[in-house]
Image 1 (tube, rainbow, N blue to C red):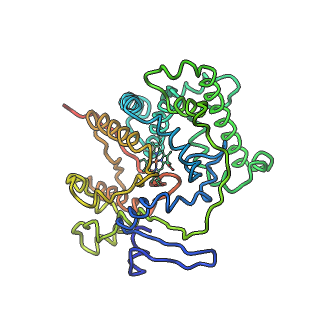
Image 2: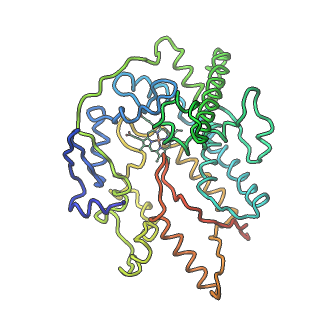
Image 3: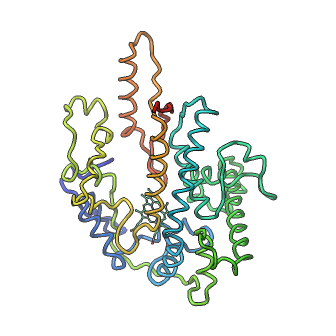
Length: 381
Ligand code: HEM
């Protein structure tokens, strides 16, 4: 995990020769940026990304001429009007979420990643489909006709069980007597039906869409699709045999050649699982001329750079600003046996630090899979 395999191999970039082909691994930020910028000479391993093809090819699972058409359709939806929508919706959603925590959850938030994923989902639903998702559970009472589950409930459950969906053939999901399979199938069909309905709604009103000042991303994609000049190609692609290059962002972000480590004794580091939380230093981003910033590729780089980069940055900034302007977030400290307040606080803090190494999980996003309860406290101004 992290940079350890590269330290043990004695190199930040190495090639594994395997019977099925060569694999290049890298945690070197210059090599990583170089690889991203090689596009289209070096392309995404689209073969592995075909599980996205729920309704047909997507921008993430195609390359060459077909990718260009998808890219044009998708990026048409991102721009100043969408940035404005994301900013406004994030301010409103984050404020409502903080109120929901304080009023309905006694200001204790046990599973932070659940709420942050929900927040991102609410904002995406608005930007993509023009849909307003509320935080109260009453939402479930007003389900659209023909649906058993709300979209904002079905999507997180589906993503949680993505591994099931990718490994078990869809035809078997609905037939095998396994609850997880059936639930995954039900969530999948619900999401598909919702998206088909959203698309049909845009198509029914397609003449009015071009004049709209602020279009949803779906409206922009549908417009591009129906335009005679720019039909979404449905051709198939032969993937040329090549070396598979694997970018290790976790390793790159902890590469000691690039990132200074905090001055902490070896004993203390070991006691805290050498957690990345120990070296977290937000000030490192303040110098715009710093080469490390230029090589920072969390959103990719080059021709295939993430088109949602601004969307995500605006969302993050607006959410953090709203939350920390009015509230502080604190770890929930529960005293054990005859601990003093200070001992209980230090134990809780160290436990949280360790979790940022011991309990990390990657499933589309990367997060701590165990709960770290936090308390939201209104700031005294
Ligand atoms: C913190 C949030 C995000 C991170 C770290 C992130 C990161 C990335 C990365 C690393 C890539 C691959 C780039 C490459 O292959 O060169 C990518 C692609 C992509 N991202 Fe994001 N992304 C984020 C948020 C978003 C959001 C909010 C959207 C949409 C609203 C989005 C839409 C896409 C799409 C459509 C692609 C495929 C682009 C292509 O293949 O041409 N991303 N993202």
